[in-house]
Image (spheres, one colour):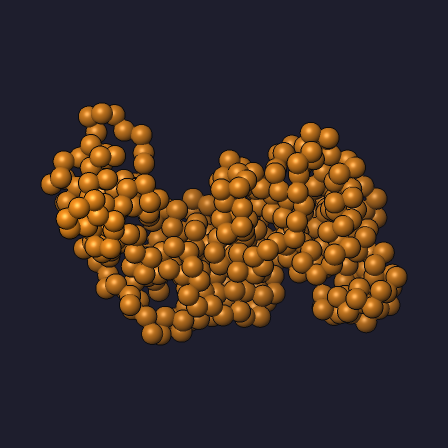
Length: 397
């Protein structure tokens, strides 16, 4: 609960936070924690019940006589629409107010076709997923996109793989179809949020998630929260130059950026330059599994370059865990092994003393979960509950 002076009473938003956290789940407990009178507690609980955010039952333990009615957060009291856009594949889903994925679909979308093509498809897919659910239950929308995002405005500022989206404010486009709060962030940030919450919450507060796929990016969890930086550009490790890159021109205009020499796109490019017939990462996977020497050499080279960049990031951030995700890292064990070798050799002894470097355990669903949590962190905060009351909604069965 927010820190308040003795003269300031706990609000409806504060009471919801107590119930969600489990700190106080009966009216008497709420009164004891907040100092509110019984009528004041009753008014706040009645408001939460009316808005479908809380439910109650009488199954609580009794110390004699009638058991007290226990209050519980009602995750079914609303829906969050989510989408995690990648360079070539997009996950689209519907979550409840606890961030659980209720329904999802995966689409092959070339985001470089531009927002005029992708956004209508995304909005139509959400409507299809909502076919059997009241649209009135939608409380917010969350999106992750492969671009640097000015979070406050939901505007893409520079895009790794979707240049036609640069400078686009996404929330107004979504709000025309779904008039609810809309939040947009970098795709790796939302994956980091989802992975941390689902796998590491309560265990570690400092985590670095690295996505190695068509492109390379990172999401930083510091002190248990996502670190976006002053303008949303934190985590752009793909544009750190590496040694011995060979003078490769990057999309950003620089040379030998990590993204241009160690990503899945770079591995495909280098294999084609060697005369190999490869068109997708699946073709590269097949060569790796077959033990192809030239392919293995390229993967190990990419791992070494990624490891060198990560070594510097680890010295700077001192995470407890580095999680490697994305098509390349999830598929190529030599990539993970190579990164570990370089990091433990080049980072400081203290930074690596307890460091774990692991592959993602959540997989593609991390992005959807992260999008939902990004939304819920805002729309269910005490401030949002108090300042912008959510509309009435029928409670989903």
